[in-house]
Image 1 (cartoon, helix red, strand yellow):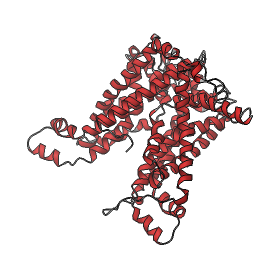
Image 2 (cartoon, rainbow, N blue to C red):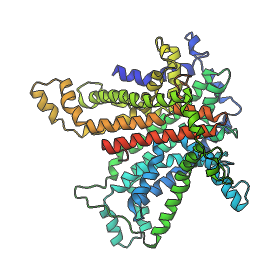
Image 3 (spheres, rainbow, N blue to C red):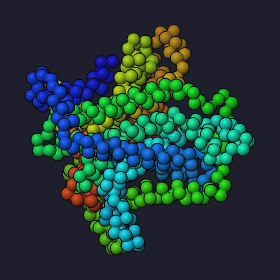
Length: 548
């Protein structure tokens, strides 16, 4: 219990102290103040900052919910062609960093992007759109969040009892009326959960606002924290901590509200003991129109971004005015693969993804055994504690661990090492792994424990010899998920990055600042390829399912 509390609280306690400290923690003398919050809320730009953040959240959330729910229902419940393939492509952005999506959007839809230039060439419109506006970066962020909504709504749409819709059809209800009065209301828990997670994702979104908002001077709360704590020559640690604490409180309140609203989710049960086979909805003549709209979203919103990255990584310049075959080159990959810094970034990312995921899986397994399968009197408290990081944005984890390394004696030796990154990554994604193993544990009958106890086996022996082998598929899924999450993580590394512990995400950011777009595209492609290989190994070789 103490180890879990320490793991969760190590980044939070120093952050809390710094927020109320009148000086940096390394010089703290024990005095407390509210001055940091007075300074924060007294800033002349605070109203614009709050307005930008609110409008950004609203636009990105609406986009994610509308398109996510609609696409989930289309691929799960209708008879459009190639539903399986479309589902896989729609979920693919979950497995890549928002940094990759942001870079792809710039290369494709930026002012000099491939598609933007092509549209200008065809229509004569000099600026058909502007992704460097608040609306533009909000829509791109919504595009990166939509797959999460699709994932949450897919299972709910697929698992509904089809007899409810069949009864409505017999009564003469149209497909639209059935969707509005039966399908969507029965999906309410998934919709509420998706909405809460989208709000959290929008509040903690950092990469896309940094890439698209920075050039036009648009700041959100996350980029404000980054600018004040990282880019300023003399960072105001108290101000940064105060802003981070405000963000943390907002996210925590949203997670608590979601838990409260879903406390009676049993009201929406639709799978009975005599469930019948799910039937897809026949769209009739609308089938091809819906398929065309879905395919357009896939091509313009996902495939185009990936294609732009791949194409840019193999050419000297990307423009529809130039034949790509005339400017083909491998120089971008040579610059990456023969540069010691980029080599370290790739190697460090692989090491943290595999090693960190293994350590994280072991920790999660131990916590699950105690929280779900022991007579420990604080087991319920442990179960709640391990889920606390769900309300802590990655940027806050990074900042909290940074403060902890400065403030807590003995931790300074880990500063600038891979250990500190792995530590932050494990804290950041502890609830995700626990969310896989804990439900699997609850499905294992306790009769095994009782029978082994009667035979004289100790609790540790029961866990090691009986329960752990049964949970092997869950542990593999946990390990695979953590690897993917660690591979694409960027926010938890922001304040912990130092020369020598580079990772791919930070290498991309550093290469983007001086305008090395070819190197950025090459690093993004390498990240995509490595992630795809990991997915292929675990889904094909070990049978792990990450979309269930």
